[in-house]
Length: 260
Image (cartoon, rainbow, N blue to C red; front, side, top):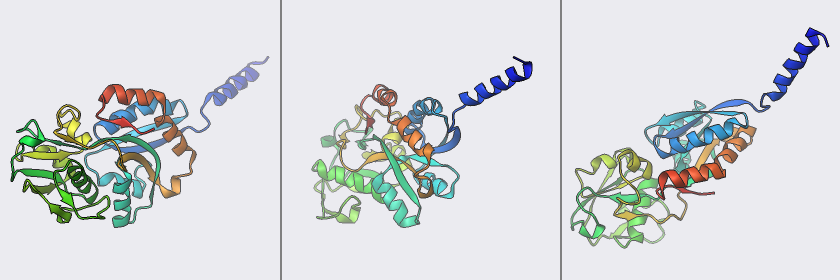
């Protein structure tokens, strides 16, 4: 065989070894568990020819704006009610591509070790966005702390409270700031990713905790125009693997629960 034929054979073999679907995408996440889980997904996707570049955000607003603008190709940080609310308010053309994990939201306190110890007239901080704030109010109703109007759905507001036996003073703040209010309030409702960033253990430190049920499972979102692209299938399937499930269970010890 001539040197030229050998060279052509080597080039052809190398070309066949390259992943047919090789592609790079940017995926937005909030810092903490979402980012950590996607780091576990990344090498699995790479074996299927998908290079994931992780972009971290510090709030819940920018990731959808960045996705809708095409600055990133997917995000992983939100649940369906939050996405629905963002689409209704901002007109985003974004769709769910697959479920990820559930982060049962919790109430924490630096002053009291149980909810019963929180005094009458105490101050409770909750997220100020309709989805997460409403989620906390539903948690409080589920635990018998207060009552809400009938038929409020998944986005009740403070104005929907009909009975507040402890006369709690509810303060609404940005979700990313709730953990930072703990020194100034009697208790605070904190999303799990922000709780872990603040050094809180969602299982051991919460004095009230949401049951792992309902519509609050998180999801991977993509632009509507991209939802049928091959890389979306690879991204979701790489997430929905036994390796990632085992990572979530071992790493977060019940604070984060796989939804597949």
